Image 1 (cartoon, rainbow, N blue to C red):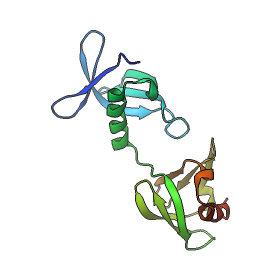
Image 2 (cartoon, rainbow, N blue to C red):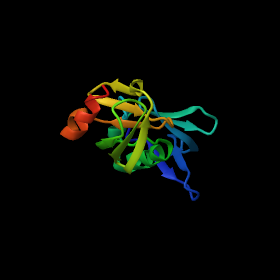
Image 3 (cartoon, rainbow, N blue to C red):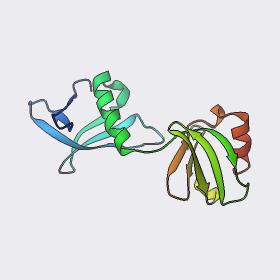
Image 4 (tube, one colour):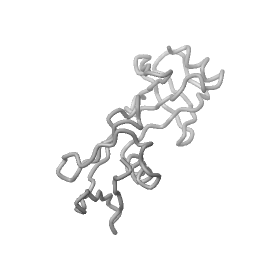
Length: 154
């Protein structure tokens, strides 16, 4: 997959140049498995919605191409990762959680314990009352305080 030739035009639009030298505008970059396998299966879609290229694994790309694709994905996706649960307003739902994420400190409202989903590899997905999804990438990496709070809802 290192033969993938990506660049940006003067307007900042991602371009894919194929083996014949033809340039195609990439309209959207989409992960097949954004939570369970974020580096596996990425599709580059053209302006007509058809797939221009399939990337089996992002790690197989050159650093430059991987950076261009990750920048596109960052614009499209918003899923903060929880690094610490500071406090909760109540152990009954609905409750307001004060949390630290990779995007800064914030609060979320947990409407129901059902909005905490177990994923593969010790991961959790928490969806707040506004529909924003927060990821806990590895429950074991949380502090003892955070795990204690979380255990009350699991």
